[in-house]
Length: 185
Image (cartoon, rainbow, N blue to C red; front, side):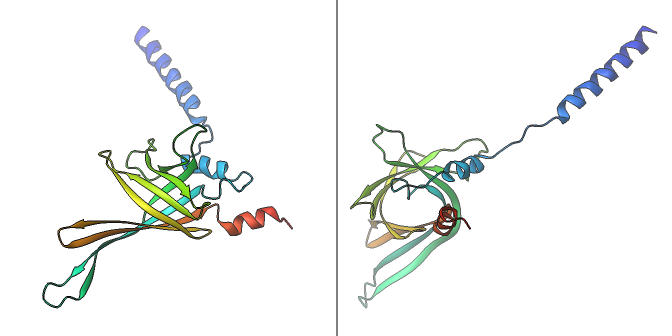
């Protein structure tokens, strides 16, 4: 008799717990939070900020020993291999902007993978890419279009020049979306 009452009591507790677990809160991802943040009024100081898709091309170039002609070989091409958010850093920081990875291999970790500093009144940028082993690669970047930033990093390896070319395509907020938001119908 006591055993049966204990089973009924356990069954009722399980039903109560299941009812409690069915109630869920609305959830947002980090990217959704960033979209909300970037959805605020756009001013002249944060045009660089946004969510970007990153593509990379690695080119090996050098001169042929016999003919003297320059040869270029595409070693690797990765289109849209990463999503990053470029965000203005805290006031008083030595960095002007930070780059946060949105496509990191661990779900709830958003590491800072780069730093941006503007030069020449915002037309040029210095980008310091941070590798997982804490080494840094300095890139020279230029704003090609309102939604496109391109940059290069090159080094010599023997007689060959290895060049990394990065392209950052802004996917949110796009310039056309900003203009539509400023002039509602």
